[in-house]
Length: 214
Image: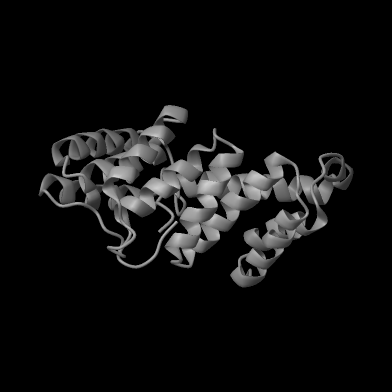
């Protein structure tokens, strides 16, 4: 999964940002041109927010966007979005590669760090998981933005490294915070409670199949 937060709070942030970019490029084309956003990049953004979008076509358009050597801000965004798409498709190594490229362009991209940590900590594929690197990236993400999403990922990384007491304590705090947020998705709270139960029992959390972030 992109972390549960890409399908929830973190994911809500990502979707909101994509929609904002889409609205700006549709309503203010002159702004888009002024910011040197290639047309193909705008097309890829539009496709990524469409409910019936074609992931393969989206990735193709983003590759074309990168071929045009866009501004660093646009390049980093394209790489991050490609990472999210690959992660949703369960193509973990490709996702990790795009996220790693994104943070090389934009070292402040905490979502890419968090998504890499999530994959490395929770991936269903044993050959992909790497607890040590997951903890390294989750710490980096939290140092840039300590929100519910990055901290939830950090708890998963702690658990993957056998630090279950710390993971359970952190997850418990996050659940308490989430319950105080009006409108916080009940399904996300339930997922966090499930992970807490695992950590409390001395087990890490592993994705059932695929996944993306908050």
